[in-house]
Image 1 (cartoon, helix red, strand yellow):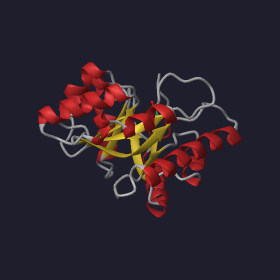
Image 2 (image 1 turned 90 degrees about the horizontal axis):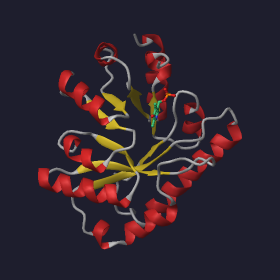
Image 3 (image 1 turned 30 degrees about the vertical axis):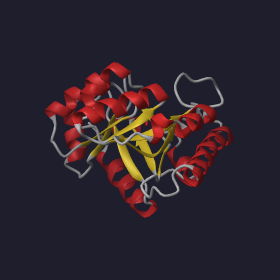
Image 4 (image 1 turned 120 degrees about the vertical axis):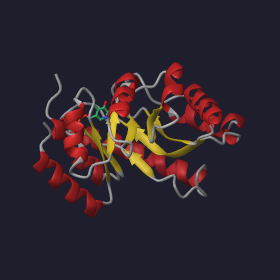
Length: 222
Ligand SMILES: *Cc1c(COP(=O)(O)O)cnc(C)c1O
């Protein structure tokens, strides 16, 4: 069961900061999600498509489902009709697939561009050149069914505060440059999704607008 007093304290704290809480419910049962839902939480994050689909089918229709984990192109079609935000748009090919399937469904899908910010080698995420080459391309300029709402990144899993803050600052800097050069007229390009249970306080100080919190709310995962 989730820790309701932690939830209440965190929600109050975030109201003052204008930071959005994504409650990361991966591996947790629907009852745990409902317990936070009853406290007013509506945004839940999952990292596996199949699990998110099952929970979406079982749980109240006004939950906003955020996909925070890697998305394979062949699964895009299952979620675009209802997903609220895809944090993990990490390649031009995936973006093009989201555009294509969203056009077929007649929807506009909100995404964040996921950047590689960890100094250690990580598997997923855009680098600056790949992202900006794509933003300059016709494929991006002509897309009408994907709305880029901001950026997302994951810091290295380490206790080294200076390193984690450096990585968060890198994402904030990427956001600022993209905003100034590619999205200056797009008022809703405004989200910086960074910060998890272990590092969210640093993330907020470094400019996060959206934190993704799992174990601190729901307890450890097996
Ligand atoms: C699991 C996960 C989180 C939440 O991690 P906690 O440390 O449990 O808060 C956040 N973001 C992503 C991408 C995750 O996969």
